[in-house]
Length: 145
Image 1: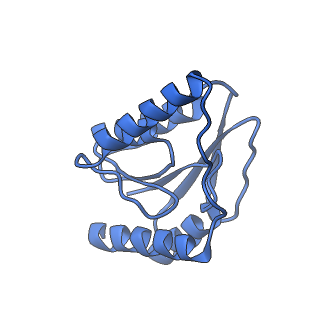
Image 2: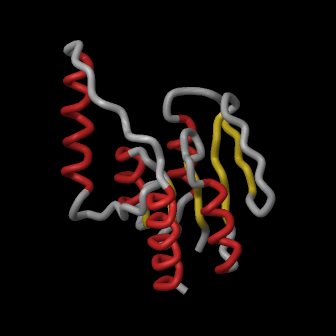
Image 3: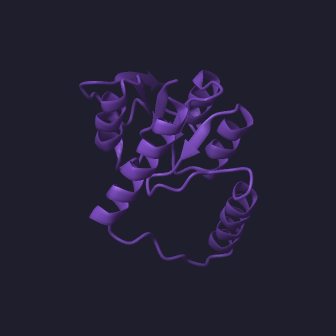
């Protein structure tokens, strides 16, 4: 088992690395050349900048039983198809039961934006969100060990 982090815009890189170390699970950060990440305790894979280049690299590396940290619903769906366990930065586990609704909401949001509408962005990150993420990641790792 490994943990892969889609690091572009990921606020829980350090929490993930710390939690992975507690469980002895290797952790890999994936980013493009515009977002360099180097963290002790993790391997960094840097890919060329481009639309979804990090996503495609991650989905090609992830295997059944691996954990993928991402806020991208499309990447989460591809990871599910590969048998991985995708998890977002707030502790939401993406599953076969919720991914269709999440992808649909992404589609609706894109339609609204293309029509000139605006959607409210996410609120400022809280300590409770960090705690929820760490708790869910710990639970997933405990269940898989």
